[in-house]
Length: 435
Image (tube, rainbow, N blue to C red; front, side):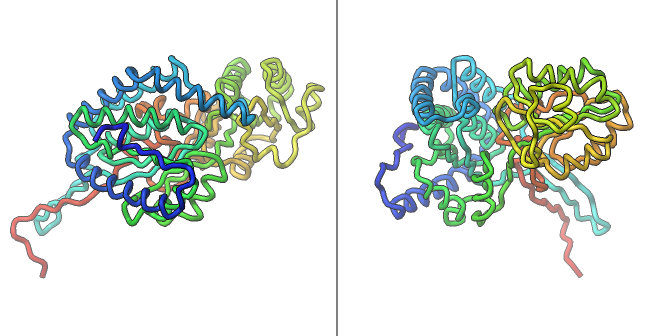
């Protein structure tokens, strides 16, 4: 069966029962493929990844044509500029997607690693060894690149992937998935190791969250609050939660102004639609007299709306009043909330109260203040003197990521190949029996 023919699109109008049967079959095929992928060699999986990258490049015209149709529908539906930016592909972005898949092939093999070993007094030798999780379902919105990133990372870690794309990126993701399946077949691995859910119908999500008859081992949601809330409320399988990115930049009293300005502008405006974009600026009252006005002016002059407290409003008439809701908002737009705080303790308290435990940064030349911030802020990623937009698996050296996990399970921060592994114990004896 070819890659494309395996991706039968469930027709509009098919019943929930039809969708349920199709999804159960998808789960069974994923489970069978997962077994074969788990037993494959690192060389074969790497060959498949390189073939996937080649297929993405070869199929670029088809992928971009599909994306153009998705974009046209998105614009007709008046989707936000930030949403359109996440959805859009061009030659440069698609080439980067293909390169990221090829880079995953160059990562060390995560499977078979001996994580720990010890010998008991009775002579038994124990080993904890990395193994695949099995079948990973990824439910995501708008970003077609997640199709390639998630598929590549799942394959590298010996897993099978069931990918449910958002309806807005359905055509783009379908074409990308076909390229990924082509690469699997080229390396002699089952194409069903990467399957895109072949319908926009939300009933398919419910089937995944129910576990597809025990074939799904973990669900990874990547999207807005409503999607993550649904997954967490309905899932009958473990979830790697990817919550919203209400990220902060705290400018400490000992911060260098020029450094703070560059970090702030990058953290907020490099790409406003990514989950690592800064949404709140906190400024220490100890440096507000010298730092607050130029930082606010830099944001405004760069085209960013500022919603601020009384101090921020006092330094520039263009600042509008911030509400309580603003401190907890992920704008994903050219908007930022600005607040002055009476020192490090207040900054940490603000982040803990309003943040989403995603990525938070401190700008300071005070090593002790930085150490406290990094130790006491309970976020998946904490940053000293750098932009929050480094919250990205590629920037961490992971090759790619499925998402940024903000929960407290073993997968936290960028979810790369190591986080997609479980482990088992191997016990070596020489005839021992238990008394």
